[in-house]
Image (tube, rainbow, N blue to C red; front, side, top):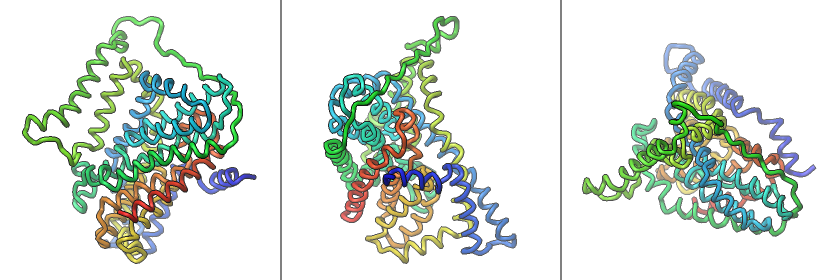
Length: 453
């Protein structure tokens, strides 16, 4: 039995569903709080902890909705006609496994820097199209390697424009604003350290996959093209014409995108302020508003837009039902003082120089159990803030270290790979050897960057 088979079987035996993991983590947090903290009131300690849990349960409903919309609207954009035309034009150049691996990886990681939901689905569709093209033209292909290439963007996303933690700390009134204030994108995503890291990944990962593509075995593939179903009804009458009107959707899409660009480019000029080079305008709401505008504009009608939303919304179910439990865990950790206990451990084990690397590896471990960047920020954020302040490590560097760690073990945790596996028809154990290869490269790059800056 291969390593990939053993790993997948072990993971299936050990790891239940992500929702069950959220419940088990809640129970584990309550037990730790009972053992490591004392009651702060006259109530029984367990009752007190359960009240902390209930009190935090609904703290992040807004954040959960924001992350759901970023994922769903990214999926919607991936289903637009322009995206389909772009992929079809690129597929023609995928004439070998190595070339296909390079192109699919490059597009996946580049798009992931812009939006993780878009990259997740676009990479999956691209990998499928490459497989269909190879099958139709009798081109030998290592299809699992191409599937892994389509998933590679999940190694870049949290250091990009839709990264959960950097987006959240840039938003006015965020949960930890009193401790750390507002941290603009100029200090996180557009910092020198992160730009060097992201550019390195965008160029190194495609080259590494090209190298791998030259050395793996390729075979003829028999993959049938998926039938495209036209959802437009044969007869459109009455008010239904409004749903299918390209004029209305175009006007709304243009108005929304114009507002977004006006707010950033024109309004500062009229006010005599100049362009905001701190990029403080980039926050979850701005990203979502622009995604709405582009998605409605590019689909060409409200009907097609709604059809795409219906296809994409299922992927956000995990965020919807898991975030309240992660927020409840955060409520227990802060209310009971457990966050201070964990912070003491971080401080004792780390120095100012090694803390970011320590954070990177701990975040990678947590991500295996909490496969959501936003959920991980809720759980690990309070500990990170407390320890960073005590060690006098810049909080923006610590946030990026957490983001990098969250990204890296996406190559082991198959939760976000489920849409890709469904679209490509591949199995987790087939792409795992190649995602582990990407993980090893990523560990070297991330640790080097964190130590150098």
